[in-house]
Image (cartoon, rainbow, N blue to C red; front, side, top):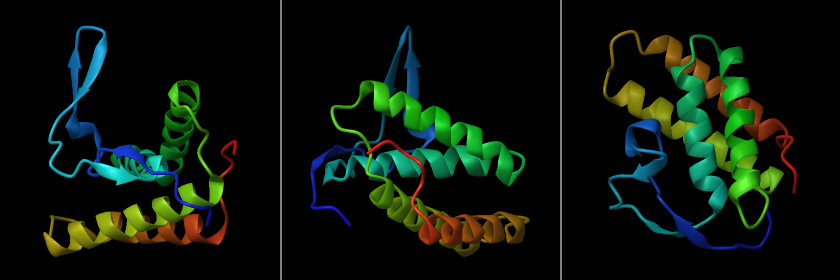
Length: 129
């Protein structure tokens, strides 16, 4: 993995943390704000979008939307290997939380999340470095 490039990160990024105010998006629940990899929040959003999608393939478009938006707004482009690592970590973390909370019908989402983690760990995502 590349050398750390710490930037401020939300630390618990998902759609429920975003508030729409006129033409801006505001972030809520900043108790996990820290210095870290920008790819951490990007990966968390990608996993959240993908999990909310009806099928695993439907989330792929969201991943590209999020990474494209980040490329336009960010100072530095996402590193593909680092993004893949964070995608795998967030998918496993989300799978654990779904299983731990024993959400109704959590078997299918947990299996999907573990599959995504395997995919992310197998090969870096196509994100401009």
